[in-house]
Length: 120
Image (tube, rainbow, N blue to C red; front, side, top):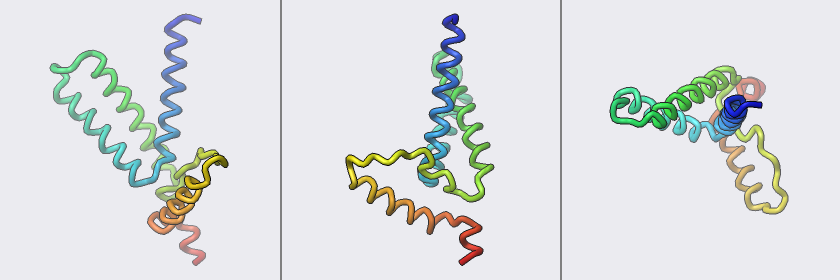
């Protein structure tokens, strides 16, 4: 495998990893992440003559990440549906499980699943 192919695979894997991490964030934090990185892209677009090639490439990567994250969010049945979707339970520290459960309940209140709302 050539170095270019290896780098392409690594970039794709890293991109997928970041996308999964972002869509699994608390919906409020996820919005903040998108807003922050859209600001970086906007800055790069308006100040590209002052930035290095690496910074411009970085902004391009953020643009692709945001596009993919927003596509997945649009497919959610309700906001917050993917919260902590890929969480594995770490039995070694129960205090985090308690915090997780509290936050999960808060998200269920703040971002209603339409099916649950209709049933209730």
